[in-house]
Every structure is written in C-alpha cells, then in structure tokens.
Length: 181
Length: 186
Image 1 (spheres, chains in turn brown, purple):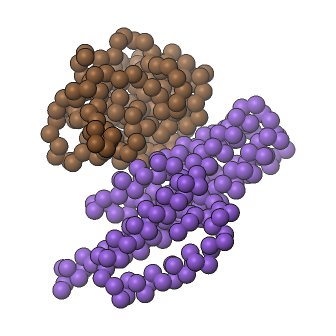
Image 2 (cartoon, chains in turn red, purple):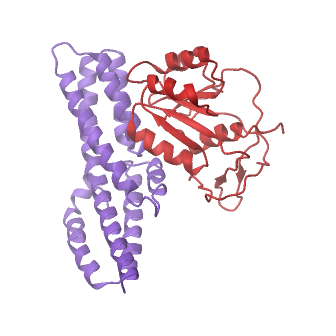
Image 3 (spheres, chains in turn brown, yellow):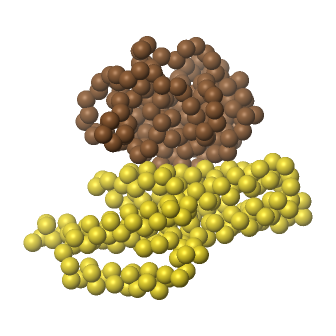
C-alpha cells in the first residue's frame, strides 16, 4: 500500500468511512490494544479508482518518537511529518522525560530497546508523571512477552517496526478524535 | 537493469558499461531528459530488486521522502544505514567470536540492524536478523553462527545494490544542479 502524502496546505476535514478493525503491522492477528475502552474512529477515505488511502486530520497532531536507531527515526519522522504530524525525535529515555517536562504530545512512539532503559520502563515513568498521550510501543522483532510488558506498563498499542501505512492511518485517525459510525 | 545476486553476475559487464556511458549522456544530452531517464532507470532497478526479494515496499517510503527541499535524502539515509550496518556487523562478529558469547549484546545489535534494515526495505537482511535474534534468544551457538553467516551474505548483496542506487541519485542530483544553474545563468 503506497503512502499518500497530502499537500502541505491541505484542508483539514473529516474522514467519512465506517470504522475498520485495528491490526498490527507484523500481521499477528487480534487487537493489540490495551482494552482501555472502545476506540471510536472514522476510517480513512479510499480512492476507488486506485485503492490508495488518504488521511485528513481535523487538527495538526504532535508526536514524540523515541528510538535508539537513527535510521528509523529519520524515516519515520519524515513519514509522520508528511502526514501532517509535527514530530520530535529523541534517542533515549532520559531525554524523552526532559522533553515531556515542558511539552505535551498527542502521540508517543517508544521502542522496546533504548540505550538507557527499556521501553516499558520509560512508559511506566511517563504514566506516573501523568502523561495522557496515546503511547505506542514498537519493536523490530515481535514478541508476545514484549507486547505484554508494554501494555502492562500503560501503553495503548504495540506494533512491529516499521509502522505500515495501514497502521499509521488507524493511529492518526484515532488521534483526530473521530466519531462513532 | 538487474540487481546483484546470482542472476546479476551474468549481466555484470552490461551494468558496468551502463555506468560508463552515463557521463557521456550528461555531456551531450539535455539535462532534464537525462534526469527523467535516470529516474526511470532507478525505478526499474528498484523494481528488479523487489522482484528478487532484496528490497520490499518500505524502500518506496525512502524514495517518496525525497523532495526539492531535501534532494539528498535518499543518499543521506542509505549512507547512514551503511555506516551503522557496517558497525553492527563488526560488533556482531566480535561478540560471536568471544569464548563466552554475550547473547544480550548480540540481541541488541541484531535488534538494531533489523530495525534499520526494515526501515529502508532491506527484506532479506531483515529476515536474517530475525533468525539471528531467535538463535540468540535460545543461546544456540551453532545456530547463531549459521544465522550470522547468512546475515553477512545478505548484507553484502544489499550493500552492493543500494550503493548503485546512491550512484544513480548522485548523478541525478548533479544533473539537476547543473540544470538549475543554466536556468539562473543562461
């Protein structure tokens, strides 16, 4: 599925398709959410002639990307920014905590492996600080143990990297604060 | 244009001769036409690599992020990847050849290389890293060596091919830079 990059001055609007099921990018079945409550979101709009998805967001969301791998940070930040997400990168948990002292983000993406602490530990610290952002845990190699560790620490979702177009669309549509079908 | 692999070795002469022709194309042809032709060659080349399973669709994201504001994005990302991957491979080699293997360190480097290779669409390297990760989780020394040898082979194939993509990108960037200068100073 090719990414659709909206023009930088695209008009914000409302997705009109009915909700679609959440699935993670690794292809492992089932809903990877923590079950905090029903997710209400509008689906992406699909062009019937070419099958490409486009996404529009009511507001310009912000994201903090926390990953020790600079290649992943560079590419994922570029993709998020093209989807209209103001994205900031950090490469370790301590730096992330410092950034969160003075900033808030709609979305925080945290890798399982960080130089100074693991992803679930930083997630736990963020929740203890009162961070209410949507937190997505990631790994480069799917493992059920890691998924449970993230969800038990307070993450909302867990996916294998890189985040697929379908996964990003679901996450970003949810950030739009969608609506019930 | 086909990628480096068993099928590519037979066409090595034709590929090298194509790159020797490029400077002459730039000298005698309209620069914008060369840029368009090179982009098409690049697309064809990436397509062949995807058919061979060397790259997957995640590489398209890297190409899509190239822009007039940042025409060197592809060159920068691939160069950074190769630098980091070379270091990862060297560290994995060092740790796996210790009398007592530190499997936690091996897992960390395999995790890092898997993440970065998947970000740029390095499919076979990604899969090889997964095997190494599983072998390390089980602390299976023999399986680790087997997985690491496979990883080194796949990485060399990926490296050779994406170095060609860097060369194409640099040629396109130089061509477009010359075209812009001609527009500014006719």
